[in-house]
Image (cartoon, rainbow, N blue to C red; front, side):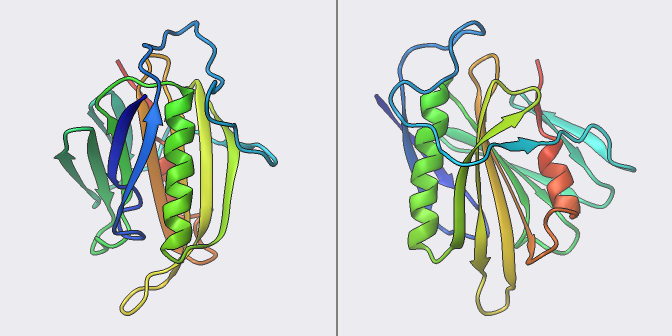
Length: 202
């Protein structure tokens, strides 16, 4: 298995990298998206409801994904050897971006679960609480896994709920998408809508 380095997985929650392993086989649209090495998470499945429209938002397309950018929000793209990171920044709030990370090499469901599992471990050691890793379904993606929890940003920050979804596209692209908002507001937040607007293109 080759080593996968994701850098900063939850940008403003955890200032550390997440590492996973993925198989070297090239995925195909007809291959079974079930992990063969890493166990699938247990618990009640999560359904990620896609967002196809946000009033005043414009689509931003790059690196095989599209995300809706609300009016007044900004995007920031950075390249790393193993992944590209796209941040969608709320006005005046660089501490709470929606982060989209796209692996530069194709992967499998095992890559999704290995990255999700190592991210879970890093979040736990970084002080996150109420952590849950659950199987997920997300229309437009072949396979997905969900992480949720609570993080105290400390001095100058707030207590936040966060959600992260790792997903596999038909073409074998592996992405991680993260959003966060002050405690109790994430589900109805614009950050959640932006996260759920991410879809594969091309």
